[in-house]
Length: 224
Image 1 (cartoon, helix red, strand yellow):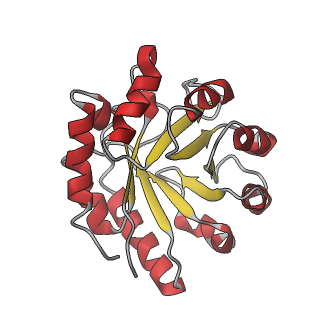
Image 2 (image 1 turned 135 degrees about the horizontal axis):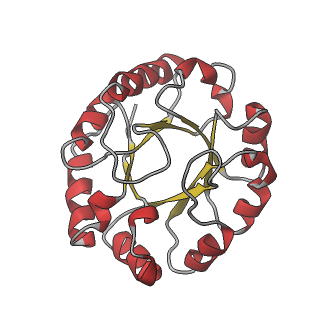
């Protein structure tokens, strides 16, 4: 099965004084996805941003907007995030009371649908929604803050999910978010991840050079 690897810089780590320029810099360097963490201060401790920020940067780039909803009752906001420019919407299995219904709503709008799993959430919660999924986001840290260290036990979780997708014949994207840097990138790629979120590893120092280095590593991996 051919593998399509994507780097998804997380704007949570960007300099918000010049957010438009930050987005332009990483997409010009070759980032095809932009990871957008929406936090509500309830499901996770932090509050980040919402629809106005997403709308404001939509005109800066045509890259895929990978919107990660770390919020309670995500079903209330799918239409709003679709309207402001999301291309892919990921909801947490821990917060979506009627997970299948939410995924169906996302896909009915022509968007990519994803489910995120916290580190302690088992893969078994996906068993009855796999046909609705374009992507699964495995949190490799506990969500809520940037700059955390990668949780080593998540490597086996990534590997198990990739094996499950292969057995089902699904070209499933497996995204990882948390602690992804020069040291952990190969670990997650070896395990079967193919969409890698990186925050400080991209937005610290030379943004364009950081993107190029990470994409060069990802280019070495061509098959699941």
